[in-house]
Image 1 (tube, rainbow, N blue to C red):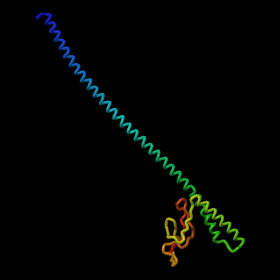
Image 2: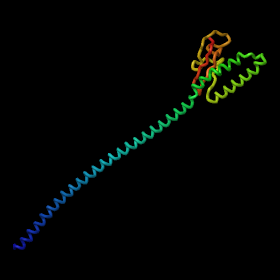
Image 3: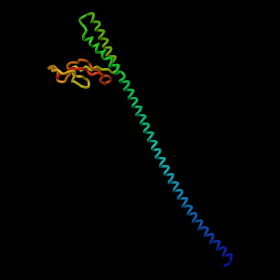
Length: 194
């Protein structure tokens, strides 16, 4: 072999070695690039999952805040309604003696006396007007004459034997009771049959 042929052979061998080294380097580079890409993909997937979890948590927080807001609004409306409903409770309680006194005036007035008759009619009209006015605001009378005794609405002053009344029924109403918007303002004071 001549020098030229040796040179050509050597160049061919060198080229093959270079190609082999290049191919190995390419394979290593490709493998490291794939590993790097897979690591990057895994990192991005983990970040995506974390972001999705954070979004879900924030959505849950927003829903809870909205629910709390609705609860606060509902409670405030209920409080306003209760305040409106029972704002008159103390005032109505102070009016009860006035009602009682007007009723006593009618019961004890001399209906035979002509001079007192006109006065009693005026008291009766005043009482009727007064009762109808307070009824507009939810005040109702408890007058349980002849009804079964109810401890939620009646206060028993005593018990008496009575052949004319059934056992445990109201036979005498000593003082009428009143409710304000279905809440007992004053129980009726009664005498109950044994």
